[in-house]
Image (cartoon, rainbow, N blue to C red; front, side):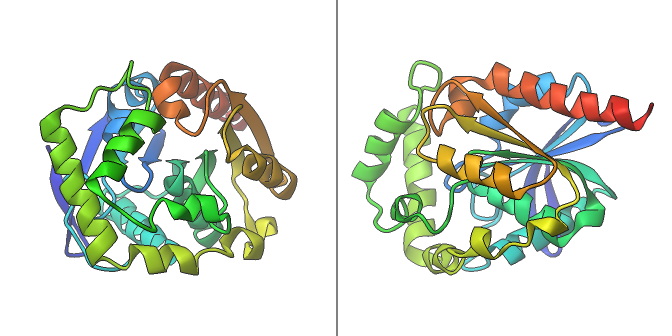
Length: 260
């Protein structure tokens, strides 16, 4: 499991098909890790692209930190990772909170982002999107796994449950994550989407509570397309092949146009 040093921080990364000309960086959501991409989505993308996945700080196998969970810092972390890997310009694809990180990065560092894929990014102003971090317990984790993941495709063993419990407990009780996410509540309303240069694919579950945010983003982002995927907020788990193929088609069509 490669652990690299990025700006004096230990970051767990995985790479596939390093020889490919174009790079896609995949960003997972809060309280998750890169495995949401690694087993099903990344291998399909890697048929065409260099794929980079990384664990956000305090997630998965990356180093733990007490603060720095605001979008400015998370975007800066991503740019530092790209610098360390000597990636000048990439496609970005982010899921859930990772979608907000991808969007923030594309707005703040437009020269570093080629194309953008935003999957199930929530509106931070929506209290339902933030309630998940208001109170944590082991029972919450068990309830979350039982009700909000597709247990026919993802089975979490007892050891993994305990490991996740420790990670979640640290995030909920010892870090600034709650305060940082509350501070981001106006991010979408205050963003100047006229500054967004990247062609954007919006992927949302047809039955997701976040779908209205995707529909709103489509009206705000000039060069964007919205694709609805069967399922709810957990479409990367429910329909990984469809997600990967839709992203591949979007990026490949753009590449074909760019190269005549």
